[in-house]
Amino acid sequence: MRNVAIIGSGSWGTALAVCLAQNGNNVKIWSFNEEEKDLINNKKQCKFLPGVVIPNNVECMTDFEKVIDGADFILHVTPSKFTRSTFKQYKQYVGDKPVIICSKGFEKETLQTLDDVIKDELPSAKIGVLTGPSHAEEVAISIPTVLVIASEHEEILPLIQDTFMSKNMRIYTSTDVKGLELGGALKNIIAFCAGVAAGIGLGDNSFAALITRGLGEISRLGVKLGGKQETFYGLSGLGDLIVTCLSEHSRNRRAGKLIGQGKTLEETRKEVGMVIESIDNIEVAYELGKIHNIPMPIVETVYKVIYKNLDPKKAVLELMNRDKKYED
Image (tube, rainbow, N blue to C red; front, side, top):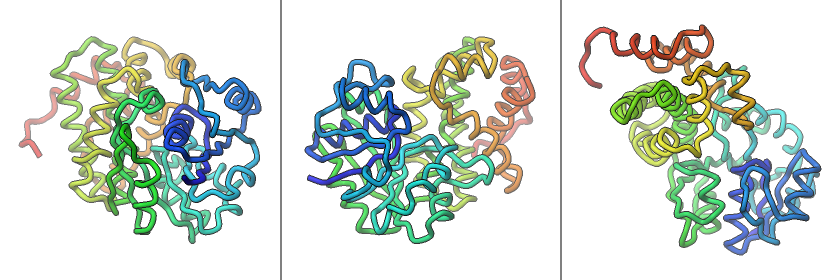
């Protein structure tokens, strides 16, 4: 049994809390919202996970120090755009506790991955990244799931494996922190594109094309930024692409589908009701591709859909009518 601090009480943070509590661990979860705290503590519910009963060994608090005190490690599970601002508020309590990043995305302003954001704020931090093909809605009801933990600190790998693993959760290990971060962040863009394709009525052939050619773009940029090629064909790359591109659980796919159906970005954000990581990630990936001279036609085209008002159907024609080339 271990003591775990979770920073972030959204669907993913709460699902991880449920998973860990069912393994017999004591879990404290931080929320900025008093109503969420009361809902978790008193009614044992999460508004993002209807029907899920929160175990009694999960306690929600709004005080960082109380959440982190006595923890064996910290799971950071806030939306990526709030990573720096949130971490600044609790970094004084971290000490030598491992900080495991469970969010997927970039910091838009700096184009940094989240491990670099944490290192900026606390260079001594022992960082890990936990990611893979996973819907909070399924993890919270114990549907078998496989994730991967990466860290440069070898002692973190068995710690996370031993704490999480059960008959419903399997954890693999890696040392490719950058590859896992990039795979998790970039796949959201392709999931958004798959949603757009669904919204304009395209079919399975189109989804397969997006997944495979999207994976090519992810791996080209990912390797340039320091990830290992093989990582992008594993759980955090191809695995996460499949689950987010093809499932209605994916908020990024849902958002893309609404755009494909003609909704505005503002209407889409309101209807999804949660942070849509892919929207900011599209802009970051577009900028990184330009900086590093990496051809990313899918990213460049969806960028024009979101930020230049390109009609999604015209975007498909633009992609299909490019110059001929070898598959790479």
